[in-house]
Figure (cartoon, rainbow, N blue to C red):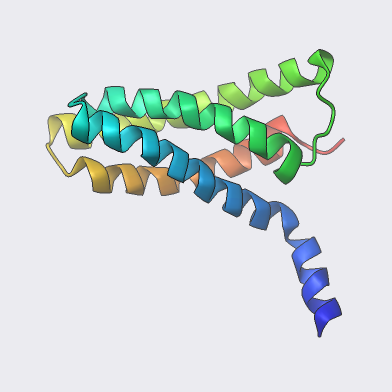
Length: 138
């Protein structure tokens, strides 16, 4: 029984690790967004932009070694990975910010709930972008 569980964990390690660190990245993202939006009174789109920068930095530093097992921290490896990572995240960040801008800043929907909804969408988009484009196995 224990061997089967271990085999399952190894088989789905990438997805499980990404989900775990995706949740942590969402916590970081929300931890920056909520004070900016609710306490500082910044617009939802601006709050989202600030939260995006912090969350992308956190995600890269955790996804590289723990999710995609990319252990080489030399500039020759890190700079292209970082460039591709930020490019992929920029695409999903723009998508998220446009959704937030339209639904919260313009349509006046609840900014806290829309942020949660868009984060779920972004986690899915970012997983496939990272797996297929950034940290693809050679």
